[in-house]
Image (cartoon, rainbow, N blue to C red; front, side, top):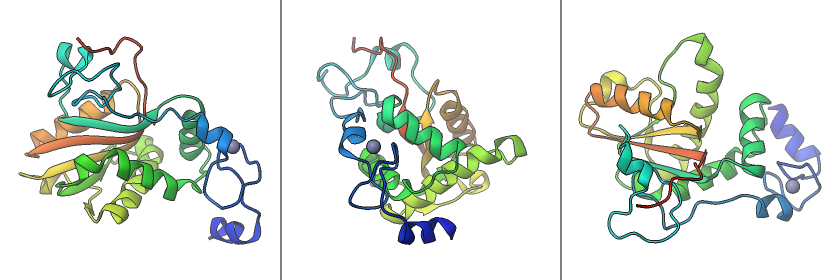
Amino acid sequence: MLGRLADVLLPPVCIACRTRIGSHGLLCGACFAKIDFIAPPICARLGVPLPYEAGEPSLSAAAIAKPPVYDRARAAARYSSTMRELVQSFKYRDRHEGLPLFARWLLKAGAELLADADLIVPVPLYRSRLWWRRFNQSAMLAHAVARLSGTGVDCFVLRRVKGKKVVVVDDVITTGATAEACARALKRAGAARVDVLALARAVEPNSFVL
Ligand SMILES: [Zn+2]
């Protein structure tokens, strides 16, 4: 409520650096230019950028060496520079004015995953207090992208997932351990497919193609 009021009363500023811009909820040109969006060619499994197209399906060395439990992961950008600041402000400082923009980025990065998905699920799936804050942020992202894509969202899905194609939404994939844990739990519960969609992904410098 206060946020919406501020949107009306305060002049629009860049959601990263707070300099004045033309509209609310966007980035200034300088901050936008520092986002390293992930574009094809990418690894079909991990979603990390590849230095060149490597045939069908394109797989990174990392995906071949250690195939993930989830089917496919996609992220809008590398977890660096402006994107790291945006994710951290969203996560730890409750700065949510970028949510509509984040949802559009997720929709674009996850188009392939969302096309025939049955359900969107935020991570983590655990309900303990320790995880609540993190869960809350991913739930906001999950609901925002669900609204844009028209896919249903379910926060506590484990009992109702049999045979379903699920997209797990998170803010950032760092080591991939959380995505793996969610995929394992969902597959054990009977999910037909588990994909992971995040705003950002930490990209190992050596995840090159074989
Ligand atoms: Zn800026």
